[in-house]
Image (cartoon, rainbow, N blue to C red; front, side):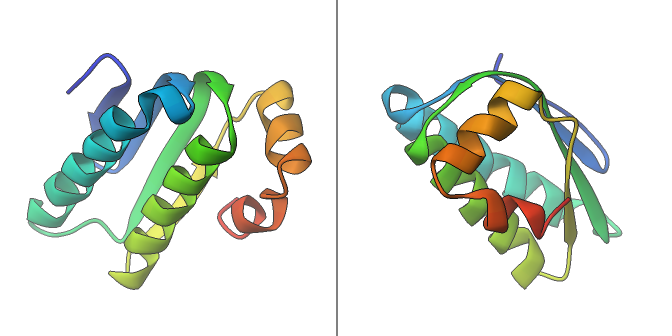
Length: 105
């Protein structure tokens, strides 16, 4: 697991910057985490995604996270967004992603 993510059975803690500069790395990280979750026996029916340690977020980071959340949902795993800092939620709202994230809170 990279320095941007710590995972346990039914959760994933994200940290660091989630912006266009890290998009390829972050996409790879999320794809890897999704594969790990799908390999668990039994598969989790719920996954908490802790955003408390995210230091920065832009529209690209929001898009990556929303796609990850939607991928979980399509596979029957209920994603739950947890502990976003207020300034990160303010950015999510400013960038127009509040409805997408609200569906998973």
